[in-house]
Length: 321
Image: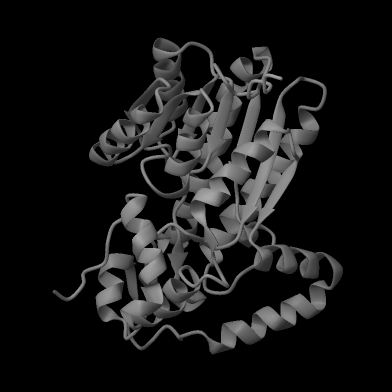
């Protein structure tokens, strides 16, 4: 008996933040199932490399360099999709930034940057794409939020605030679009081994902040293989699931938050007290590759995360020869 065709075969997808990390892997998984994929990210060189990598699947792939926080970005992106592939069927809102540090080291502009990247930009793009998605027989929106969009993890407040907003919009959008044929899936991943610790931005005492975040994002018991995560996300979207929580730790945390929010809040407060303070002269926006040089964290702790970053095109920390 012939296996049924994948629901996304022959459809067109736009994946934001897809030059590296999870976005690249989601795009690769869609292409593997016969989806036409438009990649989008800011770095033209990384996009070119990602496009060449995905072409090996045999599915049509194209890319456009674009800053999604630009108010004109939705029009540019949809025009590019239409010119290359035709109407859009699948929108994956994945682009994001990670800012790590204590509240005392954060500025209003850090929160605004996070909200523009992970809430307002996806909002504008989704609203612009709705005409295509309503007309499609497989209209699908995937919003990659985070377990941080359900549980307020310490030292990640701009990220948490933006991801809470993104998750709320995504879940509300599913209710609003009920009966239109458009499916909306909200993804709440825990930590994944993508090498994200080298692309994150650190505030306060960058070396100390890098130490705890890089370890958590690399160790097997706390983080998940990103390729497995990408497969699960595409499978959930194909099956029209409303929500997907990834990693065992994230599932436990989400359940605890729902059943015992007061206890969860106390545990998070205890965790916050163990994390580094801002220091006498807080620093700002130190990228992970530089923060690694300021950290005492042994390199063996992040070896799995570093290997994943090298495979998935994340920037690499400096290492001794």
